[in-house]
Structures are given as C-alpha cells and as structure tokens.
Image (tube, rainbow, N blue to C red; front, side, top):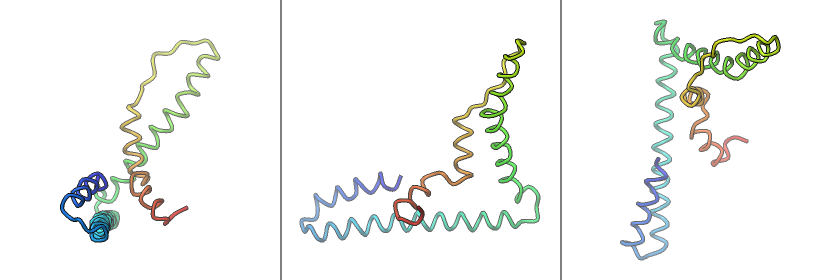
Length: 131
C-alpha cells in the first residue's frame, strides 16, 4: 500500500522541483521514510505478539495456536483427507452424501498471515535479507 502512495507523491515532485538531483534525493527520502514506518509497525506488532504469548491468561496466549490448529486441520482435511475418503468410497462403489467444503480463499488468507507469507516476506526478499 505504501508503494502505491509513494508513486504519485514522487510524480508530483516532477511538477514542482526542477533540479533532477534534488528530486531524486527527495524521492529517496520519501521511500526511506515509508519503509522505516512499515518496519516500525512490524516491530511494534512483534512486541505485542510477545506480550500476548507470555500472558498467563489462557484466552490471550492460546488464540494464535488455536487458529493455527483450526487452519491446519481444515487444510489437511481439504487437501489430504477428503480426496482419500472420496477415493476409498468410490473404490468400493458406495455413495456418500456430499462432503463439506470450506472457503479455501479465506482459510488461505488466514493461514498465510499466520505463517508470515504476506508482504513482509516479499520485503525481506527484496532487501536480500533471506535467500
């Protein structure tokens, strides 16, 4: 989202600043500020996560593992268990009622967020922080 906002702002620099070096310096400073802000937000969220995980309250410290297990079970059912059930039932020629389906788009969004597969991973890759 920040990248989408930086483009128009740096485009405005062309209209108001004629010095090419000054435009480049300001564009770099704007981009650096946006990256620094995103980094600070991520660090703040990590600190909140640490505090929640260390909480003695079951409801504060256990909600992430609960969501992880629910997503993991649903993921395993959808991609492993359900196809095996359908195969075995078809093999024996029996008919079963329609098996439940999950909204996998929503599930993958939650699971991707839990696993850190969002834009932060892309940011790390672009900065060469991971292989």
